[in-house]
Length: 232
Image 1 (cartoon, rainbow, N blue to C red):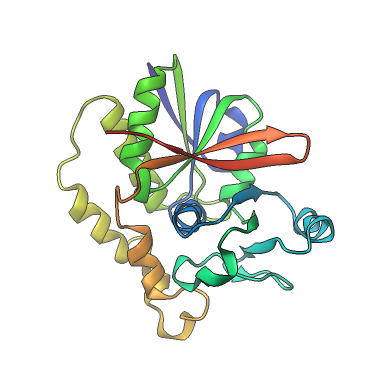
Image 2: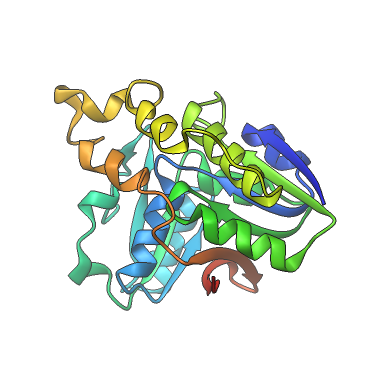
């Protein structure tokens, strides 16, 4: 199995084979929580216009997303896992757009298959890939806004790669906790809690708590994120 690590939007464009689009803070951690709270389906989209077009098509869908970290104007929810209204989203179609994660999906045109990547389901991702045993795996670290590398996505890629190779990262939990001072500082800014609440940090670093991957499929209506359980 050939494993390559790519970075940012340009990396997503290069990625081939089994492609993992990684966005730890917060897009694909959020999607895991959304599925665990009972959403019916998630559709990732690239632009705000596409999201509002979905609202015209389905008045009951829930618009979720951010630009610059802040909830998009006219949306129901931002990109915060700790701010999910469970009653609002249960059994609903979610339309999700972000500055990094969903942009990676849209740009991974050379992929044989796309799954999303986060720490909260990293072990399930590794199990899923090992069972598929693809010739090529591309781990894409989307970084901040798809333009600047960040520590959390790089660490997640290293963690998934180590499990695929049957290796062990020494001190993985310590390295994850260190993200508070190296990548996650904005979650602890008292003046920015409305946009980046500190509980989001803890929810996004809670590694390996979900036993499913999120596979990105495509149909006549666009991209669809589907939950696929992976047994131990």
